[in-house]
Image (tube, rainbow, N blue to C red; front, side):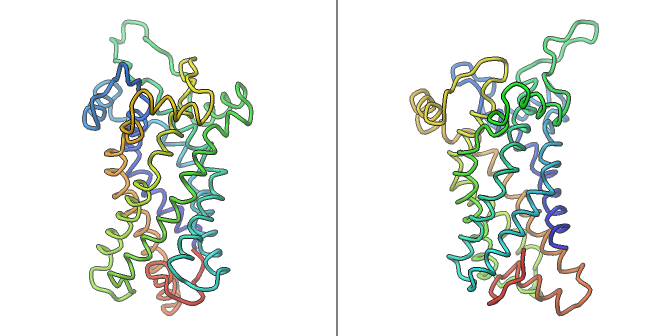
Length: 310
């Protein structure tokens, strides 16, 4: 049930937030000397005008394909780690979330690599009349073809491009994520019979997601640039340190916040949808009312000595 709840919650989050993620990636990796987009709204408008609404959903299949594994890992590891730690405290919530974030990087990094490469296809490419030849041919047919091409050209190292940045982002990020959700749900009193429960869960999940991204966003910028590096046949960065150095020298601290507005606009509805869907699904799908309340309480207000596994 936890596995299924995680999948459904994650799917809801991906469908809500993927257009914002596409805008974020485009802003993060665009050339600062010759930028295609002036800001979040201009980027969104340009993608729709040049590539249609479907352009906002480029690379969607990749996160959907990895969704099952990532949510199973995250919710399973977090719940079992919290149980192994013995006591449900804010510190243990952070440690359990960090452990979940670390383990799921194995799936998350290749998935986001494919997503980024797919999202970059057609960037800045304008529509041309059907009677003329296409200006550019897409490199990849779909997410699986993209993964196979990367493996054939770069091997396992290429598939795991950006792994260090992913670990640096995901490990503390998920710690902040679950800690914030725990603190907020307890503060708002999100028990099974609480009034306005859905609104409270949406608010807690959205704020938890926003806090997670604010805490780790610079690492995400570097990860996106490394994973997009080489698209078009040009490699700009030789290592993580070189990427950080070039970003700082050319753009200053602003370079590490590119796309943050789009990310926060995406983070709130995505994580609100994810956490509330998971919580409410478990609440209503359990056959035994007593167990149902226990599951909801352990997820929405984790205050049990022996919390049930997420």
